[in-house]
Image (cartoon, rainbow, N blue to C red; front, side, top):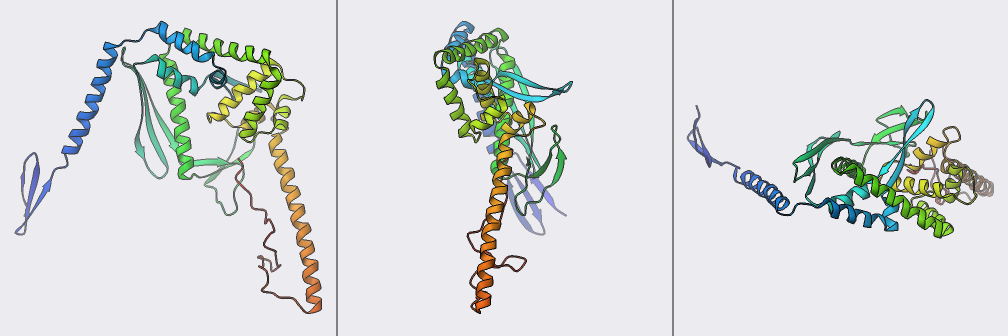
Amino acid sequence: MNDHVENSASRAIESFGATELQVQAETAAVAIAAAERAAIEARYVLAIKRPRDWDTVRIRLLKECKRPGFADAAIYKKPVGKKDGVEQFIEGLSVRFAEAALRHVSNFYSSAKSIYDDPHKSITRVTVMDLETNATIEQDITTAKTVERRYLKKGQRPISQRVNSYGDPVFIVEATDDEVLNKTNAQISKALRNGVLRLLPGDVQDECEAACRTTQADRDKADPEGERKKIFDGFAAIGVEPSDLKGYLGHSNQLSPSELGELRAIYAAIRAQETTWTEVYLAKHPKTGSASSDEDDKAKTGAKAKTEEVLEKHRQKAAAKAKAGKTDSKSEPVDTVGQTVPDDIDRGDDSDNY
């Protein structure tokens, strides 16, 4: 029978003549709680001593909106589904704008803390708080540790499969650590944006959005050709060619001011991981498919034809050697069906381009 002797700092366990002393691990927890409380109290004290001035906040944000680079990134546009057979888009202030607002408003507190994690999902609690009014926006984000792919790599096995809203099959596969991190960060950014915009006065948001559009329009009017090139260069950096953009717009003529603004908003949404180019293209052209996908198919067909051509030449060469009695079966690798295949042949492994 065990005898227990306890106090607030340690616990002694006596069993079969032996005594074991277990020190309670309370010191670290108490210290962490005290540090967290001190930090919260310091934020509130500073907010009371230095209250914000909304007129100053408004002027600072409008000044940001006059910067061309910020104006381009401050507005996003992405597809959100169909209504009565017509694709619907959502457009508004982006994550970049919310980050600027968080800096200039002052006395806003934001945090993202992991509250659950297992091999299949993680849950993160995102909080945005106005320290002056104690208004708090909280959202729990669940991140599944899987990703969707239109194509599978060689040897890759899907967990499941589904059909997306455009009628295309997609595969659900296990995500890597980097992919999970990217998904989590993107969801945290969106939740922070939503929280900040819910606490920011609506009239300030409307005025800032109008100022961003004015900045874009003035620049487009001054140098439309230069702005067109900048937009094409930006999309090319994320893998979208000018031919894809022209296919999306339906023409290759000079871009109108509204089209320049639309492409900027789409670019901002893709950069913020709000959407993908494939989703945007299929939303506008659901029957034709993506221009980039068509080019990929042509490239794959060309590569396959080239591979067959090289293989045929190699077969003829091997046959000639065999006829002359000089064939060396160990000179080159052999594929699964017994044909020798030179090392420089592309065996057609699919890459992850989605």
